[in-house]
Every structure is written in structure tokens, then in C-alpha cells.
Length: 111
Image: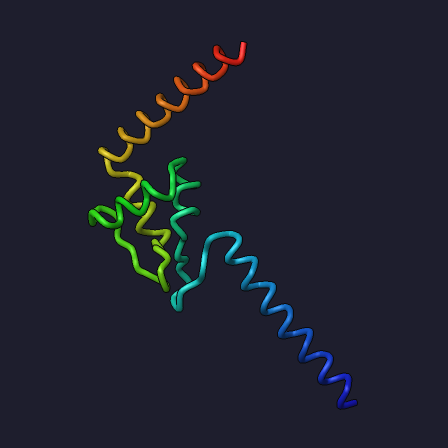
């Protein structure tokens, strides 16, 4: 009976570790109040940007963040609010145009 309980406890711990790994892979870590903290990479994926650009916005103060160790983390709510700012929407549209132009140049060069 005791062996069965030990095995079950080990399985529970393994499941917890796997859940933590999945959260890290998703780039989100839950906070006490159920909010998510996104990594710079996860924010960049949402905004179709780069992690470096996200970190620069954090450092300049336009995107609220917190440090978890050495990693920049942004609350999902803060990222959503940041994305609806007019100047960010214009910058995002400009980045999309630049990507399209870069792809077109690459396609021409490959042809």
C-alpha cells in the first residue's frame, strides 16, 4: 500500500513539472490573480514583432513590465492595452508593409 502511495505521489509531481514546462513553452506564467505574464518572445509573437523590439518598449517605459529573474514579463492585459494605442497600430502597419516589401525582394532575388 505504501509503495502505491509513493508511486502516485511521484506521478503527481511529474504532472506538475510537465504543466510548468508547458506554461514556459507557451510563454505564459500565471500570476496569483489568474493573469498571465508573457515573455518578450510571446509578446513578439502576438504583435508580429521581435523580442528585442518588445524589450526596447519596456525599457523606454511605454510598455509596463516586470522582471522575473533576468526575463522581461508583460501582463497580457497590459499588452492588449498597448496594442490598441494609435501610434502602436501605425507602427505595426508599417512593420507589415516592410515585411511584405522584404518578402517581395527575396522572391525576386530567388527567381
